Length: 388
Image 1 (cartoon, rainbow, N blue to C red):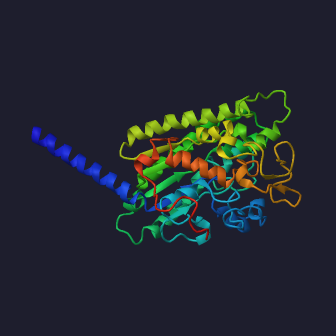
Image 2: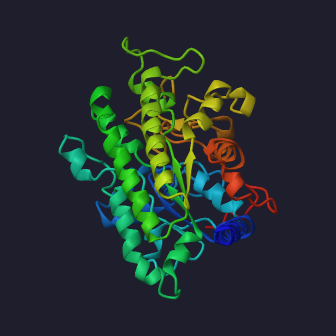
Image 3: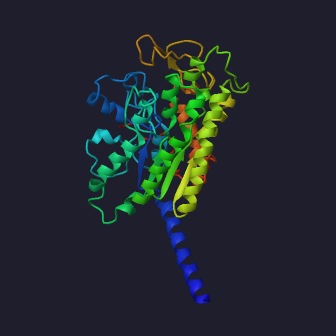
């Protein structure tokens, strides 16, 4: 019995050392990404001509001005969190899946995220009178694209699960638009709160499916503090029903709603960890990573504050739902790095960079990401080529 116990302990140790060595030395060979505009590196740009032919505003300057010096389909003035992750791992910036037509190989990664995407299918929202003005590329649709590409992606390897296991899988952010579209359509927070378990279920279902396909490390972001969004601060401006956090100026109830989503998500992730202890399920606390900048913007270089948009259509928060950033009548700030908010809905490159550092170099992930993969220090984040 003692010999058997020793043998099992030895094999377990070898497996543990092998796994740790793989992640510590090579980290991840590629990134597979799903999500919405917080992660879209150009899919909506490719999909628009195939749908209604109307190019969204983020395909025009000043989008992309800071790093790429041209619009790329990213909803920011520069790079997103996914771009900083790729750079830190020594990978090329991850291309949108639609740009390549049919994805034939994984390479250093592929990104299925689409601006405006929801976790739940469009049919769910349409049945409730909410119509997505941008896309029907829900999380299930994006996962379907990935499955369709698998025969080509895996055609040159003998073990497809091992190929996927070597990838870092980014699950969004996703789910925020399920609430955003409904709120903008006039749904009450109480009604939208009933969506949360369904949104979480959709995310969990996708995670479980990816684990079955071979995923070994998945980063699952929570929702940002939407009560600090310039868009919602504008929509609810001067409403006598809204209470604000004195320390940040953010809308308390909307932030409580985001916290509710994040709490339910973390509960479900804990259950997945129990079922799959061999898989790294990393919760990325976008909410608290961002809140530190809303509480003390000046301390982090956001001298123009964290609530007012850099680019927009005017008003107290420089946001106007009728005048989007890049509209001829909109205005854009001269120093976007001094702003946290870019266009009312999305953040500046400077904001995304600091959130990235808080998450992937800091303590705002569970477990800590840098304990799984010490990120590359050979080339500081932000000093890579801007080619795309």
